[in-house]
Image (cartoon, rainbow, N blue to C red; front, side):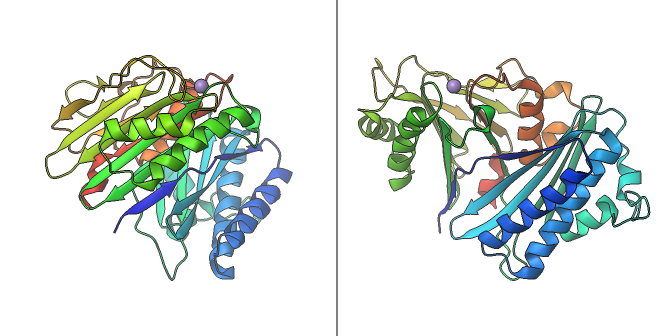
Length: 338
Ligand SMILES: [Mn+2]
């Protein structure tokens, strides 16, 4: 059965004062309840939000909690990512129960790792990123090694970037769209394309691109990239128009995937499918131009082996331009093989 991951924006909660811990807890609890979490599951999410936020204040004095709904078809999860830029994150200490307490309510990251179905950490000289994903206890979704950092400029409710991932039997189809500019008109363009894509994400890439072009006509248009991976033949097809970056990481050296210039929904001369063989176990990273393209995962020891949601958060933290919407989609192609 195919699983569709629909776009959901990353909500950023700033943490630089103890009062914001309570705010983070309330936001997360409410979000969980709104997405069908039972009271005990929503309470669990709230505790994790409290702990991650308290830990940021204790260890870094300031940072952010990134909150996103994981919309996997009918099932929902909640993703929390604590992001800071402080040096000297001490994971072993943070995992000890009671470390973050200061004699109050804290129970430490050790408890977070037990309360969340997915827990992962990357820490280096640039700071720390701590991931927790929570699913309802009774119907836990299979966690997918797919991560996204998806932000609108200035946290505007409208976002000109969007994305979609469909996962089927031994195959995957991923889309990133950057509607021209930002704001509501850009969002309209991007959503028109994503809607057309979602009708049948496994059509041939040239055909999909044609259908997105048609669906986005009459809007501002935008940049589009589509990647399709076939697990059986271990081959990735890529087609792109405009400025969506895409890189395969995990081979001898990173491979950049080629796009042609133009505007989907406006004008482009040609779309061309490029195929890339022997990519099993690689990371596929697709990103809008709100992210600088000069990043290199190799400068982060061990990061390529962390959960893709951690990788997306680190790249966003360090390479976001801050003047456009930004999307970083990271897919471990191994997830296709179950
Ligand atoms: Mn852009």
